[in-house]
Length: 444
Image: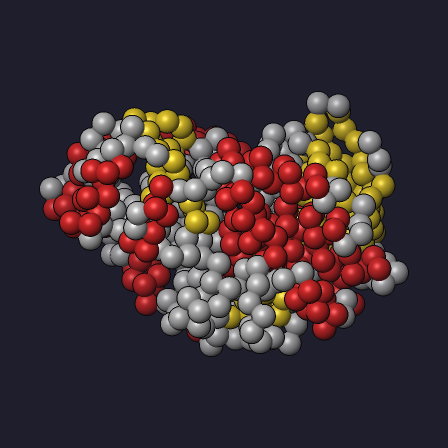
């Protein structure tokens, strides 16, 4: 195993995979470090059942590596049963169900084909840095502790662990220091799909199981402290993945709190499945097939970058001269504590853009203040809490990851310059040439 790389990426979720593949394809000797035994992040580690929108209803916003993964899933033989029935009714035209086993294999192949080195079962534990520049990271695995050097580093850990180790400034939670609740996604099997789809057609049911949920609420039978089903996706014939149920007062950076949260989430699963059996036709005999290997985390650190995206930027559909991606997902905040007012659901509905609208994500949001050779990608980029609730979606994580990896490669080609000195006009040109964004007509 080499000890020196051009680029080291910490974290193998959507942003990390995109960053590593982009850097490697653009000529960098790249190492991708992941603490689990597989790639995919929240899609595999937490079992999130679907990728969110890739378009704004008129244009493809997420192209490049993100789109490539969707196409690779089809070639790998994966096709959700919904696509052959009512895709616009249940998942929405631009939601893509995820089979985690297919996704693991597709991402393995994509990363290895790029020439990137991959180190599983490994955690970054320390960063050695001087004068705003990271020199090396220390990792821990079954082989013990080891230092790896690199010219550039990209933090795709989801929690901003590497950036924090290197002294980056960060923000956390709301004014009371609370973050969004977490969810342990799960899969159920033994669904009568034909009966379920007949129910969908007859009752106008949607991917949030809103019709069934309202009936259960009227009967006083909806799970305690829940307001809605976050989402359901048929992943195979007779099998569905659900984003359903919350763990409140979560402290994702506190291992003791997170350990208790994992157990609490598993204790809640029988109540959620009882609701499905009693109120969703076709799911009367469903059984728990699996729960996510880990609790799904929506929010923790937000790294302070050279620009911070804000709620006002979202409302203004802001564009930027250094925009390296565009997105349009609504403001989607899950309450830190149980709440019955539906305030966050109303905000999600009222903040939706019209078809064709989007906001830009500036490159400066990927570059932490005071650090020269570190980029961040995924939900930890520089944004306020409102904006983070939009850019945290996995589709957008592909976008920021690809931009970060491409920027590192551009910096290397330019002689090892600081990431803050990257010519963003050239970066945007490189991204366009890599079919990102996918829609040629999208104006920067």
